[in-house]
Amino acid sequence: MAGSPAPKSLAWYLAQVPDFPEAPPPQRVQLPKDGSAPFWFRVPTDQKVAFITIDDGGLARPPAVVDFIREAHIPVTMFLNSPAAAEHTPYFKQIEAAGGVVENHTITHTSLKGRPYAFQKHEICGAADKLEQLFGKRPTLFRPPFGNRDATTLKAAYDCGMKAVFHWTETVNEGIVRYQTPTKVVKPGEVLLMHFRPALMDDLLAALKAIHRSGLTPVLLEDYVG
Ligand SMILES: [Zn+2]
Image (cartoon, rainbow, N blue to C red; front, top):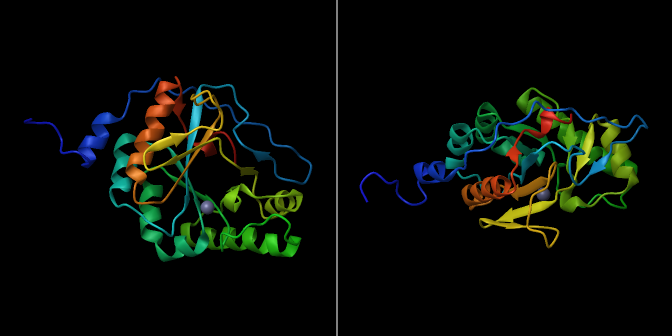
């Protein structure tokens, strides 16, 4: 068909991005003042918004993702392992320039739960220090690898300057959204997790469609927390 974009081209992805309702003015959430970072599966907000997060960074970095995020104005938060960020800094800087924000996902991507404070603090502060050095801005949000955490994690995160620790509600992989509940709806404040994997273009598109079907608008996590 003349004029229709080739399947899986950037134009093909862009043509499928839904039109979202305008995002409401963001209401920043209250943070506890008890010397520990809060642990959240979702952002405590009733606003009709959802959040897209992309983790890790070492496995795959599809080049088209940079253009997709820029052209479609997709708000993304990147929870990066600091060695992957160091090895591929220009790629993540391009996403940053397109509106993405770099946050903290430890150095070695090891499970923190049950480990001593010094170990956990090294993983969290060490990654924050490196990411600050690479990107000129210190992360303020933390995602523990595999979502595994304990009270020590939340204390260490706080001591490293992290304002909140995030789990997720939906995961997206190979272009398929997986929900944590039988109701296949993204609810206000929920956080979608995907990874820097080969199918990230499909994952981003699937997330956008799921958020749109649910009557929500994707917005930047850092406009609410951090
Ligand atoms: Zn991870």
